[in-house]
Amino acid sequence: MKTESPFLRKINKVGTVLYPLLFGVLIFALLQTGTLQKLMGVDEFVLPRPLNIGTIISGSLPKVMLNVKATLIASLGGLTLGSLFGYLIAVIATVFPKWGAGGLSIVAAFNAIPIVALAPVITNWTKDVSSNAEVRSMVAKIIVVMLMCTATMSINAYRGLTELKPFSKDLLESYAARKVIIFTKLRLPNSLPYVFTALRVSVPLSVISALVSEYFAEFIIGVGRQIRENIVLAQYATAWAYITVACLIGVTLYALLILLESILLRHRS
Amino acid sequence: MKTLKKLRSSDKLVTLVWVVGLIIIWELCAFQVEAVKRTPENVLPHIWQIIVSIFNTKPISSGRTAVQIVLTSAGSTLLRAGYGFLIGMAVGFALALFMKLSGLIEKIVFPYLMLIQMIPILGMAPIVLAITHDIGTSRVVIAAILTFYPVSTNTLAGFKAVEKEKLDLMYLCAASKTQVYIKTLIPSAIPYFFTGLKISAPMAITASILVDTLQGDGGLGCMLSQSLKHAMSIYVFWQIVFLSAIVGVLSTWLMGVIEKRISPQKRFRKQEEV
Image (tube, rainbow over all chains, first blue to last red):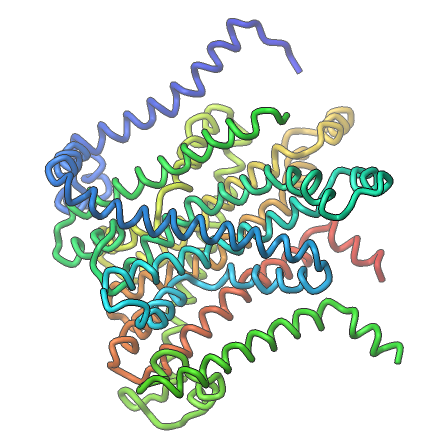
């Protein structure tokens, strides 16, 4: 490998931020001037200019926030429950390896079930939960998100709980440590990075699942549902506004996760 | 006796017990629902009722039986999902290759690749439909987008995970750049490439079904919503739910099978076992 001078390295580092930024600005400019729309042969009515979308969001902020709140409750609620449930399954699978691991492969198979098949079924099943349509749709959405997040967490957490450093378990056993001690002192800390690996997958997944389950929900609320409703009404600019909001939710949650990870795992590596 | 013992300890039995257990739970719930509800088939029918409905020859809509409807719509949906999957696969692999070849492209594209993972593409399905004006094209496009980024990021990770010693060896052998790629980099990235495919295969199918629900064009998703609105027998809905679940699981499994066929390391290991 050739050695680089500090100056060159600095230029390189600036480049990693600068190039993508320039690319982003270019796309933004092309969209704003309507050039990209022309190149793609798309109407500006269907693909509006970015600043117009911004105006729409700021113009109807209270309504947007109401929908954001509904989506956030569904995705974060489902994410929390699903991750806890998934971790619990992983713990059970670790305690009973033979039958647990088999069960885990079933859970993994659940992961491949399309959410579009799941959402209407769950909506059907939760009809009796409450007489209030808003409450029961929310319950249905949370359950769908939860089911989608469970598999990711259980598979990763199981790996974290079982793939220990060589001989570390033997060492603890040679100290005559009880199984509980091995669990709390070795397995639990070992699984933490794996938990974050799972969360990196399931945080975006939870947002997507929340949006899609809103499509099938009874009660008309949420960012995903607004995208669809506005398309049906041919209000594409408003739909784009909600798409932008959905992207912002996804990116913000992911950024928060990375922040949390860097704080919690700062003593590692 | 020995075979019985072998059978008892095998993983297949464990899986089988789990599946049977789940079916029993389903059936118990179905009996409960049957006792309480007026229309139990809307909430939770018995599994045998769904199976009977598959073999029911009574036409339910425009002279076709339930199973005919489900299978024809599954054909059109899965075909488009397949097209999108193949396109996404090719684009994803090519992009990973370009990113490996050129640092500049990697620097420009990689942040956006990360960003696209956090963007709910499925939420954009309606707008893609509005742009392309054609339900078939939008199915392909969405499936391709959903396929391309897991494939691309995983393959790139595969290119980067190649041991330095291997590259050094190739350098010592005075291998040309093309040879390094064909003999070292691409083969070692294959397992990662398949990890990406395993993630994206069910996603492509999900995407295709979801796009169906947006417009009536006889896809699985379209029939699903029709059946939910009681425009036709509710069993069509249950058949589609089970079919899509099975196809989703099978698609991941299929990728694993193809991987075993293709990748030299795994084939070798298998020979050793035998």
